[in-house]
Length: 462
Image (cartoon, rainbow, N blue to C red):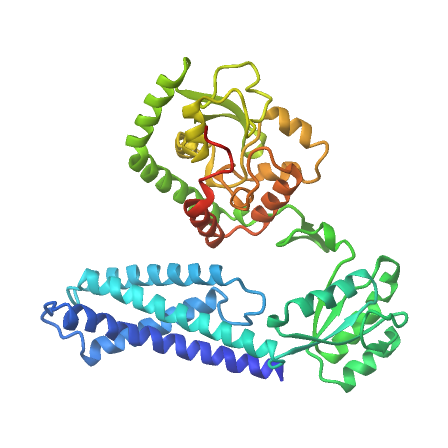
């Protein structure tokens, strides 16, 4: 039943996406030429000829959606990534359409109408998908559109999976029971031992088998997989080394050997890496231009507040453990502890003006030049001193995973309150989560949280 429902949902999504994009064409024309009083070209855009072009364009965009795997279950997909992909596909599509119309000299197209078409088509499709997702989650919470699951295993990970399913009811999974070496009081419905699994799957309509065998039960793996294959149901495996696997591992194949890449990140993809770097370059240039008058005033304030240079340059560890010099406006008097000491909230080294610019993170503005130079990113784990890196890499697991990406001016740990002299292990956990779950949507979320509240820290201004 769940497969039939999914096919219906996919068909509904394909059809409504195409219709909404087609409607957006006429909505753009109405706004541009009817409401705003624009002047038509010599060719009537409401003609059947251009309606046909809009229809073909709508079908081509739906095909692009399909090629980008945007049709399927919403259970595991992140909405921010879906929204970004829609905006990207529509942007590329509009550029291609405009180029085609220009090269063929079919019509002089209003640039404002094209913008409205991109905006309306993106808005309509995104709004529809947000509504569909919300409706599906609501009905899944009520017990509809459920994917029925049987768990093979009765150990730690089998129990953990059942608890996670209950905690995320909106995803629409129902565990009908489990098979194992014996019943457990806290596990729910016991369906029998592993020998009985095949009969149960043949007699009941089950959508998926989740294998969660413990290391001492690995001898049952062939039997469990064979039972699933004979029943023709979907199969998922929770490995007994689950706690060591990152959120989004990749699998490489060497002959008959499968290698799980434990430290792969989304930014290993050249395309995403180039997009993020392009945003860093564009963003840092814009921010340098916008803040240059403010930086000049801060430089003057630093010069007048105490003797010494305006900029404070300090060695930090960057991507791939490379050392670079990070720039800040100097906020403290010159001492000999800059290379090893963290600043503290009540730090006698701070000047009064330095306290002010640190309170509002204005001392970080010169790091836009580090971003432009490619040493840092606008968003990423904060760079640490070589002294601390050499110290923490021996004590904190996964610490050096942070060095797989460019360090950032702001990051996931910082917008969650972990900045300055705070729990380093907690900061590392947030940084690793950011690296493993990176997306442009997550970067935008961090950027907005930084702008609206993340720039003011807990330090006193006195």
